[in-house]
Amino acid sequence: METRIDRRRPGLAAAVPPETYFVGSAVFHYLGPAFAVLLFALVPPLGVAWIRVASAAAIFAAWRRPWRGLAGVGADGRRLLLLFGATLAVMNACFYIAIDRLPLGTVAAIEFLPVIALAAIGLRTARNGLALATAVGGVYLLTDVRLVAEPLGVAFAFANAALFALYIVLGHRVSRLPSLGGIDGLAAAMLVALVVATPIGGWFAAPAFAAPAALLAGIGVGVTSSVIPYVCDQLAMARLRRETYALLVSLLPATATVIGLVVLAQVPSAQELVGVGLVVAGVAVHRGG
Image (tube, rainbow, N blue to C red; front, side, top):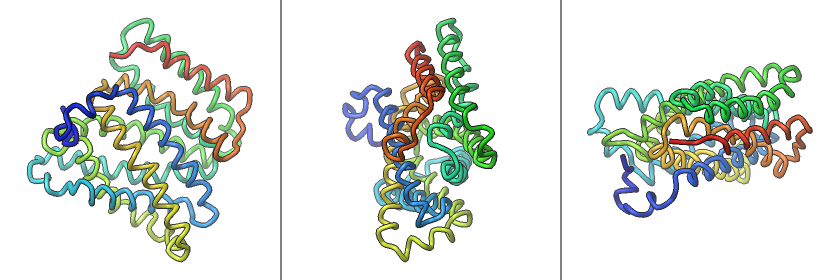
């Protein structure tokens, strides 16, 4: 189905290939968190996570005013939006704790692991099986580098990974809601995420309110981490099969490794570079549907 933004400008969103939206999401998915890492010296990770969610919720509320469409959403749709919003809140908290302890590329690699099962669903050809195996091998090389060094960071990274897989499943369903789907459904879920995230990280955001530059930087993180990539995700999910989108997610470790190098000077090892190469090769071999 089309989102409301598509119906207003029917040729605009449809003219762009869905893979292009995914690339936009992949870049901003870790560009914003890379800047967030730089903020951790002033604001604790859970505080930055709260500012990210709060700023995104405020922007979506002003832009989409999603409450206007809630009347047309049935009980099942409301439960979906509540679950999606709660997932967004807890996923962001786990993710920020993980990237405070591990390089972005490693967190991204672990993030992909549960998504493998989603990618495997519906992939019946030998070519897609080879693509999946290649990508899994690359993720293994990336993950193996860090498993022993930081067990707590790895634990939160795995929690984030499970929630990210749930994000894909729920986000795909939200993109197809009949009356409040796509970007409007995302906007409603982000308001729920703010409610859930406030007791988790609201108190930790207090230092930012005493430092206007840090607060503005946190709002920028919200725009680049939650507004731009999540909107791109909805536009891509509305037109891609879930398993195809899930396999494309295996590009994220490569994206995160490059961004970690450029923004945070996190230099990958030779093994990590081989892992990135295998992930990219797996996506290249894959034939979507």
